[in-house]
Image 1 (spheres, one colour):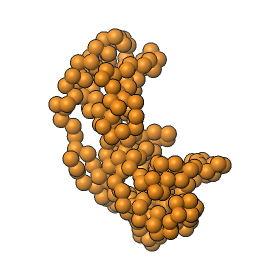
Image 2 (image 1 turned 45 degrees about the vertical axis):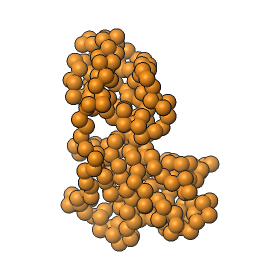
Image 3 (image 1 turned 180 degrees about the vertical axis):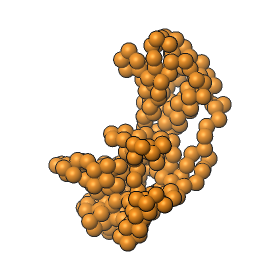
Image 4 (image 1 turned 135 degrees about the vertical axis):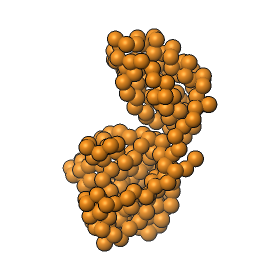
Length: 243
C-alpha cells in the first residue's frame, strides 16, 4: 500500500529515510523511483546522494546547506508533482547463465524441493522478467522481484563460506546474483560470466534499480567465450529500452 503521506525517519544528522509504502510492491517501488528522479532533477541545495530501497528512499544531505525541516518541506513540494515527472526509460537487460553442474550445485536440490525436473526449474527461472527493486547487501547485488513461487526454496541452514562471483541463487521467494565472491546461504542454481560490478567502471554496476532483467541459458563453452570477451573488454551487454 502507498502511504497518503510519506513518513520521514532520521538517518542521523546527515540523512533522512523517506518511507512511501508498507509493502514490497512494484507500484510502491515505482513511487520511490519517481521521487529519486524528481530530487535529482530539482537540484535541491545540500542534497548529496539518494539510495533507493524496496519502499523507501535514503537521502544524504549537508546540514550546513539545508536543515532537516527545510528538506522535508522541499520533498513535500516534490511529492505533489510526482505523477507528471518524466522518468528515463527503463532497460531490459539479458543476463547469460550456465545452469547446473559445477556452475549450479544446488539446481537438483531446488528441483527436488519443487517437485520438478532440473530442466523445469531452468525453464521457469529463465522465462520470467525480473524487476530490480534495489541494489544492496554488497556493491552490485540486485534484489529482484518476479520469481515464480513454483521454484521458491528456503536458504541453506548452514551458509557456504565461499560462493563464486556471478553465482545465481534462490532464497525463499527471491532470486539474485552474487557480484563478488562471498559467503552466503542462497541455493546456487547457475552462474553468469558477466562482471556485475567494477569500482573503476562508470557506472560501477551494470544493473540499476528500476531496470528489468531476464536470464538466458548458455552452455559451458558459451560461458567461457563470454567470460573471455568480458575480460578483454569486447563483450556488449544485451539490453533494450522499454516503457
